[in-house]
Image (cartoon, rainbow, N blue to C red; front, side):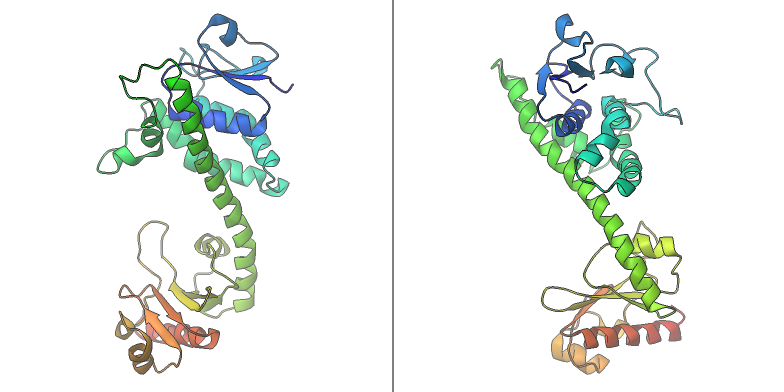
Length: 307
């Protein structure tokens, strides 16, 4: 049954009910958010979904709280916040309603849960406490900075701030899911390019796109460089060895580092070579032919020195 009301608690807000609200309002745009702790609102009913308040978890009654004793846990024992519970029960429908192809729903649902939802769940439950210089820049902290300051006494301040923060939270959810969907589209294109490349060391793509996950998935360990067009030139880029860090399977030639245009052409002997980053992970050329020639030359040098 389509709800008329989406009920969460009043007062200060946190990332978990904000992000839950993003999912629920995206799936049920006609429903009205009610922020209240009054018994008449946090008592289950056919016209509502209740989350992050109410003291129980009962999917059949459409109430999703996690603050009570015996609160639900994931299969691996990690705690849910309201966001995790809402994503578990409504995430797939949200993705389908957003236009994601049916074949991609399960993959994106799992990826978003692991990379976005779970960290919110753990932070909200105190099971994860980011530290260091970036601790104050995590998404939960940034969303909470949108709460009214302590001496803003206007009665509607909390609700007004909540709805302003909701719009910002929505942009992060939609962007992250959009990126995940795009990576799946890119994967298909990259796999086709890998097949076309055969045992060659250079992968040519029709445009810039995420490529490393598809290369790893395909087991294309022989590939060393990727070439693709940009708006006005062509790019030659290395492939990182691991998901974390910046070490490449092969660096561009040391002699190219930091050179541009005529200087770079003179060193590499390729007309149209226009730029090589001093870090030797990316280079540019004015034409496709020049970019491919640079990539092949970089392959030869990398193989000659044993990478």
